[in-house]
Length: 276
Image (cartoon, rainbow, N blue to C red; front, side, top):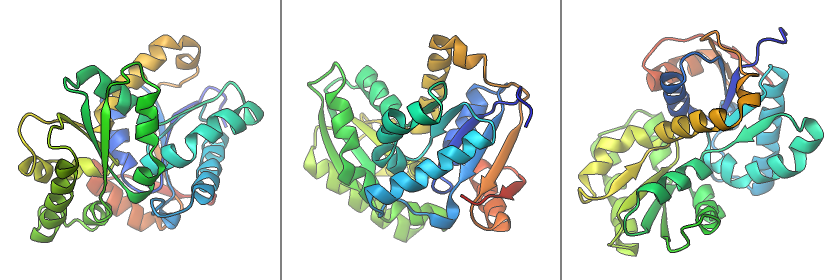
């Protein structure tokens, strides 16, 4: 491996992280990227903390092997169940100069910036909601007056991955979950799409919420916060290679990944198989 080649790694349990990668390439186009999808073991949302931690750590180590010094865990479940342990317990042993970032903190920081009432809703997978990671992250921010309610949306990921977006069945579940979270707090002014698949449902979501509610979609936010991070950490920015290349790896069928990932990104791509 060329020592000068140090792409930014983007990891997800499946395909949703491609929405984050797409924004990163849009906002930071000069950098190199490697995307790794653990599609063979997807979904992570219903798995235990221990299992998600082990799977995520294996993926992180693989991306390090592939040359990454900076990795974005573009999966809410992995960010919720594994990121803190990896940052605090594993990185000091593996390589204290490398960094692994998630999607929860950037989303929380953005909400603190834009919410007027401090009444916030989180839409996520069962795993993300049960972890209460968003609730805990808000407690760690300076704006402690924020009130958080959550709603698990277990059908939303299957809807997206099976390309059922906009169908009557899809709209039924979107409306049901949005009614559920608004019943928990009718005064919400901000909603976090706490899963990287959910931006594909944005048009449906807008149909069932009041116009004044702001929606935080993670791809754009993570891109914005990564720019800020690299400006604040020039020593890491200098280690990131800049050839405008992207490589894709999957633990599942390459043919299936290329087809579905092409749908998420809106372009054709070539992928390679990897074993974790």
